Image (cartoon, rainbow, N blue to C red):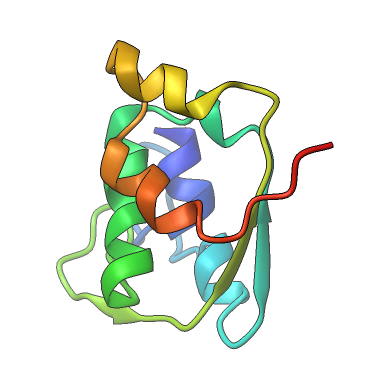
Length: 106
């Protein structure tokens, strides 16, 4: 998945064309802030991985087997109604709970 590779990175040989290790956005933002736009469009599998990073500060690159520790502050945006998406089953309730501690509505 392209989004997985972009956010979490990948190891060499993880998929066709992956000739070298690629650090993802979370690795590159380690110690800083990462902005994720249109969070509501993230597939459930990516939401699960985001939850792991938020809760444990840990991720695995695509094709990797070693967990990596990261310390990243997240700022997320969406124009979707996330509570409604939770009720529909298209957005994880536990992820919304972790992200919704400081919400700004414009």
